[in-house]
Length: 249
Image 1: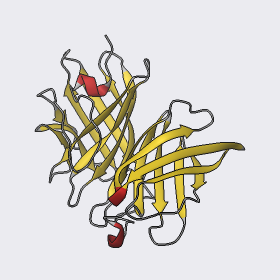
Image 2: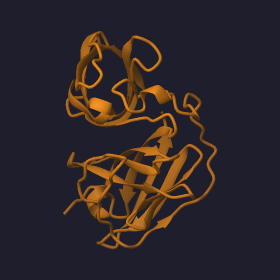
Image 3: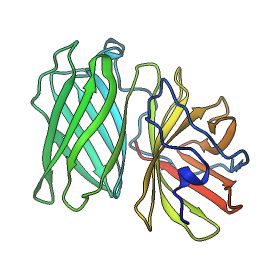
Image 4: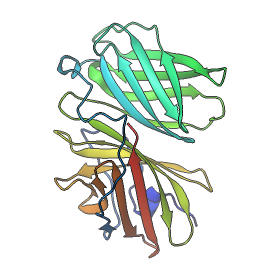
């Protein structure tokens, strides 16, 4: 029976919340710590989020997309009065805007709209007071009917980085492996994986240690070197699963 990467390493489904991450894990793995020459030329090294918005709906939200693969960057009046978003999917950039006003202390629900190849695009975003539980509720993206998102709020003291990648195993299974990582005061990671053959999608999450290793229940999944992550581990079927990702946001 085929398994997604999260089931192979017994992650289990979980809700991605950098303040609380719980999952189980198969107890053996190794990581690849070779250096990488890859650099994300458009990525920032410090948070865009302002301290004044850390406990507010306003601020910066970052996400990863599966179906096909991409990132989402949402700016809700972080340093201006505008509400905008940029989605990059399969290398194509889609600019989105919303006209919904922010009322602090109230939940925020807003459709972001734009165009993609001349066709309308919409992404409906929801977040609770204080910036809690950011979620893409619905999306309508031409050519990408099964898009799944994971979104987190960036804090002023903890840069959120997005990595797009893949996994494969020695039995020939392949899939997408896209994650978000926050170091600084949070030191956590999470994202989504999808089996290329079955389309099954799972949430995945864990913590980040001082050696820039992605950890779950004490086990190393991968090591982050610069803007690249790599790792491998044996699964419960004794196949070797390899993950690789490159920072794109």
